[in-house]
Length: 508
Image 1: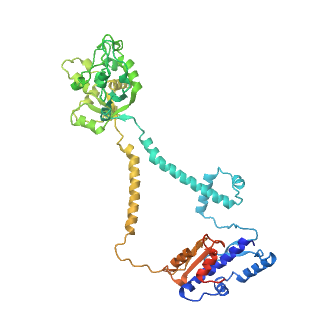
Image 2: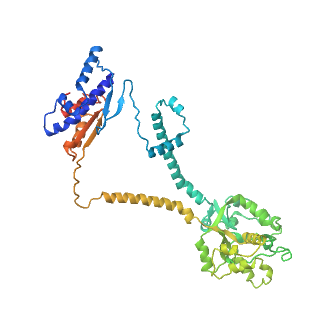
Image 3: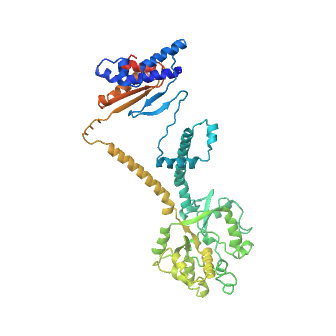
């Protein structure tokens, strides 16, 4: 037996002797001798043979302790029998135990997660020769993979799930747009779209006879500029307005909001500026306005559904929602109700649409179902929809405050409430509002295991005194001191096993 094994055996013997003699010191009884104590506490540990082995090795190697190889049997805490046997040349043993169903399931999961790591690689690179060691390593890797998977799930719930349920949208309300009215930050709304004209206003506009200065352009900033860009009905609804009804493209809707007409200094109406080639083209809006403005597009205009509903129900306005799209048909009904427009050509939309919109606030604001029930063919349906989209579309319903978009926030709030409830319950259960009866000390045997390595005498005394003061029956309490090697700690003048034996008054 090597030097370190001999000292480990001595320390082991001293540990057991120390653990059984401390109660004698506390009770005032004289400490027992090593032989008597060993006979009382160590029925299968021969201290004489240990000393004999030491002297034998000393005679063989000039004082160095030596012990002949032999098998040692270690007993468990309940003294139920040997659980491992150590043979000469072996430092580790393999124990065969019954495999339960839970263990089989965990083994399957472990292999399922770590099959991509070949066992020969662990044997060669990891120096794991034994299969149980390799399996233990795989189990640790499997646990790490499971933890990583749980982290990914949490990150998905916190970040990814919200983006899936409610994708990020680049949308602005009219209140948001109104705040962008400075030369360096100028937004406008045009037929349900938002455009940033901060750079556009610095470019040259108009004709030689009618120049559009930057100051005039800034009058549009933060506004809905639909009125400044009217579209001929025949251009917007070519399938509903025939060339015979409007041969000169002169049919324009009456603007219901008179104040909006006075807001802007210029109206981009085809034919109003003869010196402009662009304004002489009937396709001015589609050919010149949209391609240019799309270069500065930021997103869509959104409207709060409750506000649209208020316009419909409370004020009797012709605001409706179809498939989450908001339409304002104020100009259409202002046109057909005008006394100068008596011709039926102004009623170019399907009469079912007029009846749905003109409900005096009695119907539903969201008319998607009514729209679907209109008895028309696919071509007529598409023609009416395109016409409404070109003339009356003003944006989409703002769903950023819907349950779908706030689901992840509600879920995280629920988790936080559960955690706070758990903390609160734990706190309340820890409070003591009266005299609490002390529990009856248990009658079972108690083993207090104390590992020590390089501690000093003061620390060991404090630990032992603390354990000795526990409210357990001294006759059923065992303080088991384990000295991990015959080591002299920093600042100590004796080895740790020697300090423990001196504290307990044991002379081996």
